[in-house]
Amino acid sequence: MTSRPESGGFARLETTKSYQAVVNQVKAKIYSGELRPGSSLPTERTLCDELGVSRSTVREAMRSLEALGIIEVTRGKGPASGARIRTVASPVLSELLSLNIALHGWTLSDLILSRTALERQSVAWAAGAAPSRLLAIAPAIEESLTLMTEECTPSEYYPVDADFHLMLANISGNPVMNSLMQGLRGAISDVMLKGFESMPDWRSAQERLTCEHTQIWEAIRAGDGGEAARLVERHIIDFYREALADFDASDGSFQRVLD
Amino acid sequence: MTSRPESGGFARLETTKSYQAVVNQVKAKIYSGELRPGSSLPTERTLCDELGVSRSTVREAMRSLEALGIIEVTRGKGPASGARIRTVASPVLSELLSLNIALHGWTLSDLILSRTALERQSVAWAAGAAPSRLLAIAPAIEESLTLMTEECTPSEYYPVDADFHLMLANISGNPVMNSLMQGLRGAISDVMLKGFESMPDWRSAQERLTCEHTQIWEAIRAGDGGEAARLVERHIIDFYREALADFDASDGSFQRVLD
DNA sequence: CTCGGTCTGTTGTCTGACCATAATTCCCCG
DNA sequence: CGGGGAATTATGGTCAGACAACAGACCGAG
Image (cartoon, rainbow over all chains, first blue to last red; front, side, top):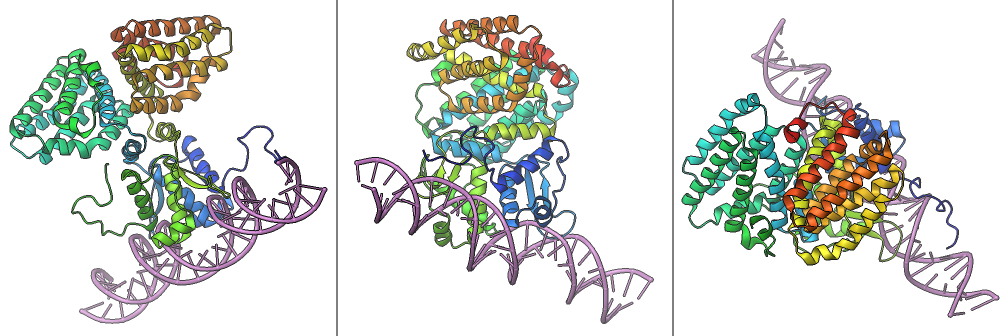
């Protein structure tokens, strides 16, 4: 109750921490377009001078930006050293989702269902994509399907599977969807792989999975978005039910979408 | 769950940076369940002793965890001071998406379409939720709908609108979907608000939006997930076309879903 | 018992130093 | 004259110590 100096009115202008101010400076330059992927930030010591803060402060800001996957930092000398705006996506979203699973009791089932929502829409859009786009990606996808028919171990199959789904998502050309889907997949990839490896009859499972993949691809090529969506949803959820259900206590929520 | 420190027989011997090691220590305790939302971390100086690193290193690790929205740090004395595992979600996902818009040329249209994909599924699930669940949330939703009918400014309407959509998403009870949707919405909220404010005939627009909201809610209450999905998709996309289309150069991608 | 100031422990910031690394420079030798 | 290796140097990574700003804990005066 004792009168705190400047706390009377609004709460936003109060002393921003120095390192946060540095972070904001960098973010502002990103939003303004001054910093683009591949751009180099000044050296830490230069930033100290420019912003009038100590090196510790600058470094804490760098750690914040690095944690967000915005920059990557390399040491040494030369033009390739220092902090640069990342050009390739970092797995920060997957990390974030994984941590939330641990922290807030998010279930594998919730993640899988979310993935289903995204993948449904994604293949539906793919089915409506321009034919030229389909033509361009078709060879890679069909090579992937061929690979899947070859005899292999679960841990060899999994990356091919992941790649296949990724290519489907790429057809629609929506980088946001793509990023979200990769984040989700990354968060569940460990347990997915375990699911693959724990399947009792892997050979027949592989055959079925590949068959389902082929059907999805054919539905997309035929332009039937509704069918592709339905197939991909069942593809994912069936796999979950067969191989992953014991990884978390299902509360019956799947009944909703399987009806 | 993705890449725990001790994963596999692989060589972790590549010099992990000290601050990253500290971050991994904390993450490991989160994954193991030793740290839960609301838990307090040791003080910085205690961590220095425990882990045998300097305080700068510990602080850089804290900044990383803070940037990810994992912890929040307050200074001063007492049990409420120091670093604690966050109990409420941080807007880090929105921040991340916003930065990606600026960095990688993601378009508003891509974000809106992604949001549509999530919201479609979300209301579809809501329509299949247990009646008791609907009953529980119904008063709040209907109060929200009543609020929307009252004359108000766009900036007064917007939070009610956001709340309405949030409540719909809550019905399905999937926190992952919820988090993703909030992240998406946060990333576009600025431009959404501008869209509201730029509408030429706000009164009639408000009436139409509220009517659409009511229809969506009625479809959910009727258990018609397909209809709810279609309505919410058109609701969002129509708004985009009317109020936001000039915010980014549409490449015609909307034709796909509007056919 | 209540109010006020003071104490104490915490994070926030600064300074200066040294280490580790990698590009650059330069000199010696072939 | 050219090439290779050693020294130089610029950069991030880590450490130690200090002080400031802050907020709860404590205690004494009324």
